[in-house]
Amino acid sequence: MLSKKISNFNSSDNKPRILSLFSGCGGLDLGFHQAGYETVWANDFSHWACESFRKNIGDVIVEGDIEQIDPNDPTIPDCDIILGGFPCQDFSMIWKQPGLEGERGNLYKSFLRFVNAKKPKVFVAENVKGLLTANKKKAIQQIITDFENCGYYVQAKLYNFAEFGVPQFRERVLIVGVRLDTGFDFHHPKPTHNETGENGLKPYVTAGQAISNIPQNVSNNELLKISDKTRRMLELIPEGGNFTDIPKDHPLYVKGMISHVYRRMHRNEPSKTIIAAGGGGTWGYHFPEPRAFTNRERARLQSFPDDFEFVGSTTEVRRQIGNAVPPQGVVELAKAILPIFSGNYKKVDLHKKLKAEKDVLFHDRLSKIRGGKQ
Image 1 (tube, rainbow, N blue to C red):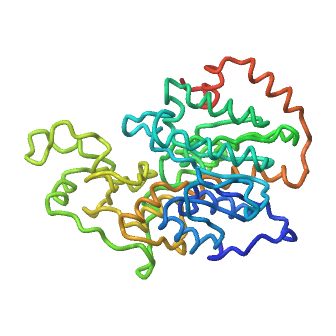
Image 2: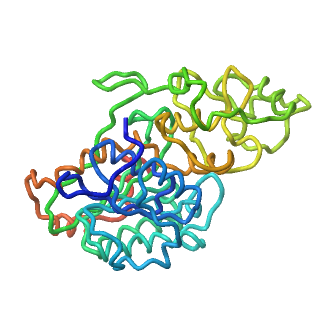
Image 3: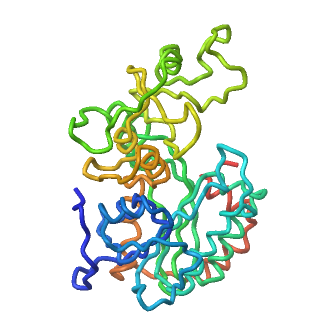
């Protein structure tokens, strides 16, 4: 289990040094720490997310607007790797969003500024699946091109974190850039889990397994008050179902309600995607109990350990958990990157690989990112 506090980086530890951007409560950092990394500096705009990060990851986070921070500031230490999930709301597929043209869509350029200034051996950027189709697929193309122009060989891949031991179906794009002069031939890790547990893989971790046996005194586990109407609606929805399962002739049925509301867990499957915010019916709901998930249950579905204590109101903690990268989902990725720091690898000509990649139609590159899916 990761210790509560992380000491300032000591070069004798030989741990790869993380510079963390758009850090949130620290889910991405936690996954990398579990693989042997160390965060030496971090930044986020949200006060309560910073408080949670500070409490669990370490007192290395700076609260403030990244667009106002100079990456060449002498108080920002050198690093080996930059991590970050630049804001994804403008790329989300749940609601129609403007992509790069949105107010927050261009914040990836702040991530780009830090990469260009610090020149880490590698960077990892995380975003929602909607990034692949935003602006008629031009957003992902522009982002990859910009990072390539900074001197990196860039490989993006669509992950389903359930395939890496997270008890949740959660698809996210992970963009990995390797500095050209390292010659490190990175490959995204192969899944460790599948539905059946066949072909040498482990079976998915289910929602029922994840939220069982929660200690009574654990933090962030308060029950959410719901209305009698919501309780009656939930009693009409079967295990693994949602609002559309309510009979259309029932008084509680509302025409036009979207299917991702009032989702109830299926105990023998990973949960549906845990989201950060939204109106009534978007919390995610227990089965067989007719109630909303507690924040601790949501945190477990995001693969956070019970000693990770979130700071803030119930709604604020919900936001932090829903915005986070599930730590378990990136542990294998973090391990796959480790050899670049030890130098224990066979070098390849990344300049040559990049040239060959640019000769491929971006449509074909996008198909590869999606795992062959169009």
